[in-house]
Amino acid sequence: MDLLEVLHLDELSHGLANVSMFPYFDMAHYIVSIMALREQPGVLRLSRVSPLACWFSSMLFCFGGAVLSAIMLAEPVVAPLSNSTSVLLASITWYLVFYCPVDLVYRCAALLPLRLVLTGMKEVTRTWKVLGGVIQAHNKYNDSLLVMIAVGWAKGAGGGLISNFEQLVRGVWKPETNELLKMSYPTKITLIGAVLFALQQTHYLPVKKHHLMLIYTVFTVVNKARMMLTGSSVSPFAAIESTIHKTLFSGHSSYAALTDEVEKTCMDKGAVNRTPSAKKSNEKGAGKHTPVSPVKGQSGSLKAKDESENAQTKHSKKKN
Image (cartoon, rainbow, N blue to C red; front, side, top):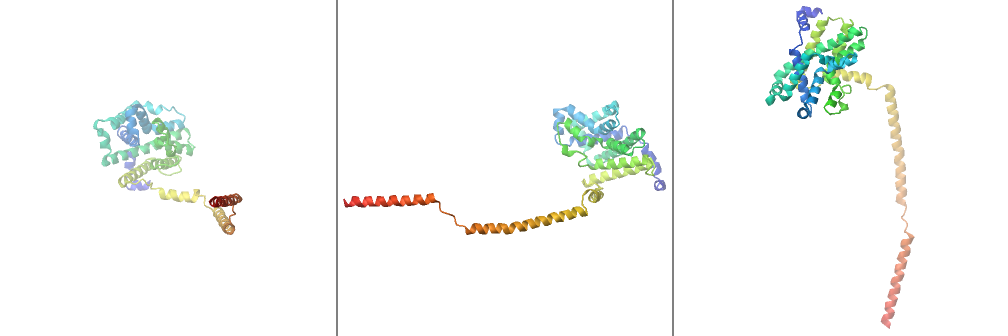
């Protein structure tokens, strides 16, 4: 882009594109991911009861994107775990976050300044993962824009997309937390990145790759830092999402409005018709007298007859 060249950011974009993610950025990704796992309810207790299940969940948090993208491309699922150095680094990070004496590593990493830095480095790795997934799909299906978007999205946000499977490893089943039902901010921003990089790879977006990497990385890092500092979880795209949903997916139309009015009119007429009939029934009920039971009348006359006979007997005895 000419604007980046004018602002002397072209060299910066080239430098960012050539930065190696291993080991520092990868380590930041592992620390932030495992800390996010530890902060979920019941995980700390699980780490004491079943360290193996806790370790496996941590590896899914760290390598979930690579595993999911491998499944989508019909590649070996264990291929992401073939890099022994990365698995060893993630395992050491897992042990220090959960079992370090005095909980020193977690307490230090949880400090806001350090956590801001680690989270920013993790967002940088998101750019490389999304781009790597798009290029990986482009090499196999160079004309399929949808496949490139799907694989890039899976590789960048796989940890969230397979969260239900990861929960099963911990013995938890919460289908309502499915990311497809209610996407979180990382999943949304990863999907947007996958769309942009896929359009750039297919030359529908006239932007150089390293320039797009710089723009996307700066946006994700700055926005994530803003959300952490303000304590806000609201997506910056909330207004756009609401407008699109109301315009395209809310189902409002002139026909729907007409049918709603007709149904409302019918309901009102039904209520009016029911009201006079209810009044008439109440008036009829008020005009009627409750009949006396013939059994009760007979029992009353018999009782009076017995009393009169008793009185006559007593009177005759007195005379005698």
